[in-house]
Image (tube, rainbow, N blue to C red; front, top):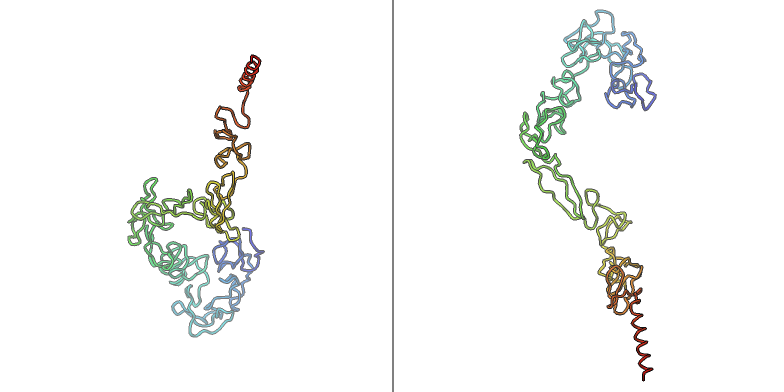
Length: 393
């Protein structure tokens, strides 16, 4: 009933987690669950042969009759407790005379034979339980489980056979290093255990948490397991993520400069692919991904990494350490140069830069394109007056 990674149609093969011995990874072909017979491909042999029992074993093969199964004539076997003596299968496919006795565990010995099926747990030995019509051995502490009856201790907690019920808020039985033993926990209660009281809105550090000692209740405030302030990176300074301090407050975030790198989304960059990944004044070595000190600018003088300098002449230099080669306004030029279109030039004599690339004379005209219409009449009048004066003499 599931899409599988292989044909998976052999005897004692299954692809659904529900039908597999492992109980997981649906879609991957694996051994079928012990005691099942998918597709009825394990043919049942006569018990006297001790051959195939008609079901699968745990390894993905057709099982033989288990050791202790009576294989002789009636009356040739007997029960001693939950062990059987007499003509029995040896579990390897042969019928033998067993005088020492073979335990039927996890099944019971009834009427001179180990039971091969069950309806309830009482049909199994004390160390067995009934599932899917067969007796299986109860698991020990630390083994996987889903029901109490699967565990020798009688306790299945957190998916693990446990030494105790282990169902209070601040305890668990599946912790690394103590699996199978109920242990007190710190921080948030584990999945399936009662939750601690929630904190105040907007203050995750006010939430209750487990302290690692008290098991029945949440005796402390949220600690390092709760992030209360996310990391940020602004203007070349990274503020590190902050966790609760266990007293109900969120401590101030520690910070660090990104130099020689620039900020990333919420943290300092750790490598560069372009100069924009570096702080201003540093350049990217794309071969190594590292940012190194770059050329520096002071008005129109560039100081290179090797100590040499470059004078940008009429132009100023940029923060990247490169000389401008064109201007958009006189602010791109070294004073007293002015911007004439896209070039920095000397202003006309007596001109004063008014910013934006325009210079005016002391009489108010604009250099380069000065309006002289108002001066021509004066010049003409002066010339006429001079001429008249000469004629009178």
